[in-house]
Amino acid sequence: MLEAEMTQWGVGHGGFHTVEIRQNLVDARSYRYIYDCGSKALVKSLNPRIESYVQSLKDAGAYQVDTLYLSHFDFDHVNGLKKLSSELNSNIQIVKIVVPFLTIEQQFAILASQDSRYSALYVNLVLNPEGTLTRLFPGAEVEFLFPSEEVGFPDEGHLSPNTPGSEGVPTGPYPSGIVEPLWEVIAYAQPGVPATAREFWRQVQSELEKQMTLNVDTVKELIENHRKKLREIAVRVLGADGSNASSIVLYSAPSRGRNVSCFIKFRHRRIGWEELPLNAAEWWGRNSKKFGGWLSTGDARLKGSGNVRALERGLGKQRCKRVTVIAAPHHGSENNSDSYLWKSFANATVVTVHAADNTSHHPHKKVLDELKLQDRKPFVLNDKYRDIVMCCRVYS
Image (tube, rainbow, N blue to C red; front, side, top):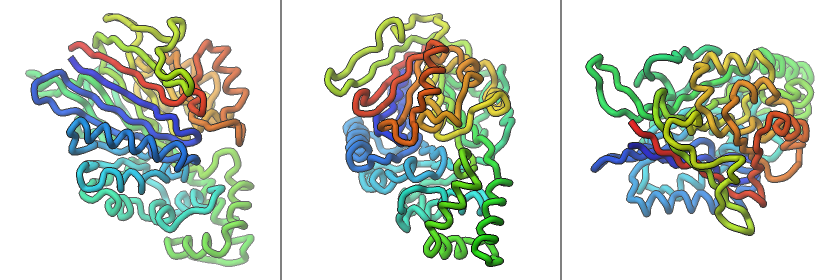
């Protein structure tokens, strides 16, 4: 038997998702990963939860986190990395860090798009992810995930142990030599819009009346001396697509044909821990159609049939049916989801929305209304709903 505990911490407008997958075997080691580590409410919301998470690792005697996934490089998804590094110290190592590959135009667009002043550490993280991350987390391997509309995971068959950005918790080798996982973790890098990022660069040169070679030094000089102007151009050119950079969507669920039982609970600000009401979620018995999967979406643009079908092709339609909890993309922005997404993940009855309040229309009323029409239960993780946890048992 395998047990999984998946926690979306209530950090407001940002993201901090942690998972531990344990096999019920003597001396079996847990598999742990983190997805995103940032928040606009860094001191108030994120830092205490990082401390709680790391303390739980220490209490369990853990010596490593297997993978840290960064969906993208927006400030509110990565600004907690320094705190995470200091809390882990040298006692707990992050083995691998998976980040989306970006062109220099996309890196520049990310920095120009941010609506708050950022540190030298953040600039270096965006422009030199590998060097910055290995300084924060010594010994970690940094893996770049290239965007693709079709990652090519088959609906029937097995997860290759060599698939970039993906993991499986195995039961052991079979006669065929293939390792059959009980649980799959699959990273899908949604394509960005590099052409728009290139147009942004052309517009910057035009409005500054300078012909320049785009490199790291040029970017640093421009954001140091023309930050306000760059922000204005970014809003005008990049628009609702933001930085137009690639974003990693993370699928985590039991593999096909498994018997699963699971329940969901949330922490209410005033009441404490509660299980979801039975009409929203309940104990699902073995042989249930509820598979216990979780889809983390970062700021991916999953609006429209084209984007959603590309994700379906990348993951495989059968995997989409195993998702029980899905994160509303981009904190519930109206530009990142619509009915195509919710209909494609028909079994995802619970939706988490990572937003502190209604600033920037996150979550947008159109998204909440659409979820209601689709009979989905949205949980806006702010000062009312703190954290939400799904616990699953998988029977081989």
